[in-house]
Length: 279
Image (cartoon, rainbow, N blue to C red; front, side):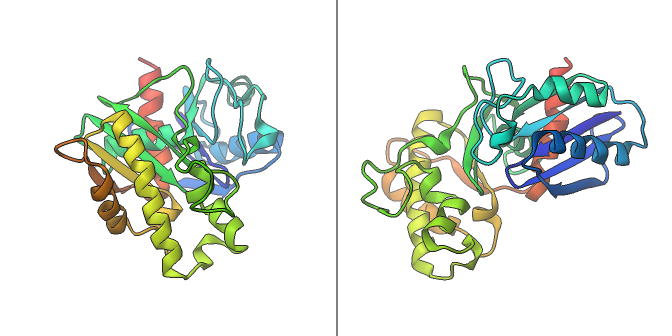
């Protein structure tokens, strides 16, 4: 029996698998802000699915950058009480098996590359625009590795906030995310109905994608997260139109696709991730 988790800044999803290649029912709950409460909520949800069958291994994604050994969060705006806590050690003790973790966006990217919109492409860039902005690059079916995990949402897309003076910073995450949009308008992003707001977001996202494409040179770019697949959402067709105006260095642009796995991308990615870690 294998255990999988997708720990986001807002929601957590867990599932189990008998064969390590597919999962059945999953459990979804609000991610506890308290670290210990979160660990126990994950354990209890997994055991409710497994019927107390022992686990051979567990793994999945967690929201934020990890230490070089991939054992804990080193920063997380949405889960500050989890930062610096020995997650792999503590979760392993609770589940009685080896535990593997990666940044949550990277795990979703792995899922989309193997099972979703990026399937069949050798180099896939996955970008999520949701509570925050994250993403990674998948090369030949594996997460591309750096000294730390990639944080594309922290690239600057404006020099001095002239395009958005009310934004917290000129970083992409503070322009594009649902959190940033809620901060600007003092309401949930999905409550913002002004079409000009979504047009501005599409233009800013195109700038962000141009920067990402020229650095990572992917065959396809998969876009996910609530700001992309929600209602209302950043219009991807307008993003492509803006991108066509500014991304001129390559003879062909990568395919821009919407994520296909909805909110289960992290669990599909965890299936692949745990298999790869055990090789």
